[in-house]
Amino acid sequence: MEMVEDAAAASGWPGSSRRSHLLQFLLHASNRLDLRPIVKYSVLSFFDGRFLPALPRKMGFCGARSGRAVRSWLIEPLRDSNLELFALVAVWIASKIHEMRPLSVKSLKALSDRIIADQHFTCRDFADAELVFMEVVDYNVGCSNIAFIYLEELLIQFREISKLGDLLSMDVCMEILDVLYETEDTSWLFDFPCPLAASTLVTAYVMSVPKQTWEFPILPWVRFTTSYAEEEIMKIVMTILMHVLKPDEIKEKNKREFSI
Image: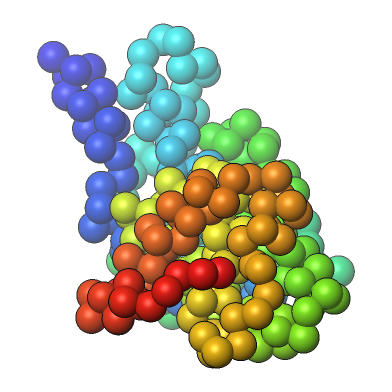
């Protein structure tokens, strides 16, 4: 009976409110540490895309076929403060991958002392948590298949062939990505990083470029560049707009001719 309850609990893991809290914590920490975008989005991919989904399986909640269970006081019991520690460990791992001078464990411990309310962790705890984190994600910390990387490449290409690219801000694109990460209904989009990147670029184009200057065939160009169908990109664009814009703004945009 206990295993059934554990499996049921794992199926809804980590829960909407807990996931939202952890992502807000992670975005806050990223701002406090002034992380470069590639580090920030690698962190989100490691923590939200890999660690959280794998954790119930690695804790043994999914039966014998889930492989060797990970055992540690950091996940037994699994407190919110421990999950916040794992979020900072994801920052530590990403900084070691992308930065010539990675963040020191002392700087992360100092930050954790300020923003983790329920418990103070030692530098040794960070080292232990890093090992647990790597075991949970099966040492999968590759960074090539991340939406931000595709988005950055698409924006560079767009600016090379059209002056309208200067009207597109990477900050706007990143704000869109952040909203999608924080919204549980759209988090699945990050499982498809390339079409998400293309759709984010189109969304930023719609939001940032004045309609009277919509002279560039953005959808055909995206289709040619990424090989994704225009219809597929537009479905994702409309999903993004539904969550990024307010209802009144969506109605106003629906009145326009969407000839992009």
